[in-house]
Image 1 (cartoon, rainbow, N blue to C red):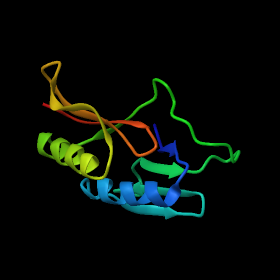
Image 2: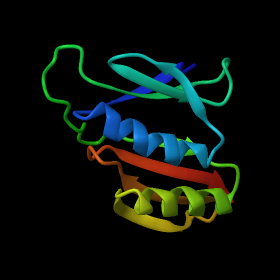
Image 3: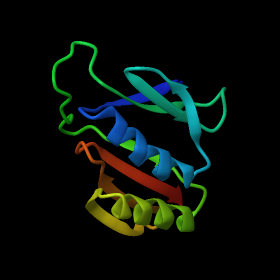
Image 4: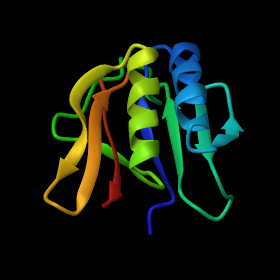
Length: 122
């Protein structure tokens, strides 16, 4: 049902470098590389993730209560995504670990302050 998700950024080159390295942990590659937007994916038929400068040319802001969840293959990939995010300067919002007995996840904020969850079902 979801085709793509976009986070706004105020520094596209910086955000692109962050997500190039972070999403490589999941095997994702750039699928779209446009002047205002860059998108990554694993499969042309699957949903993509993108960062873009706002169309209205106003500053990008973080949505309070907004979050994107990245489905990891297993708990080791959750740990790797979280570790890579921290290495790249992300802000911790919840270290990797089990939640609700069937959910293993971690939370962090990217360089623009957007909240991301990476998870797998335990």
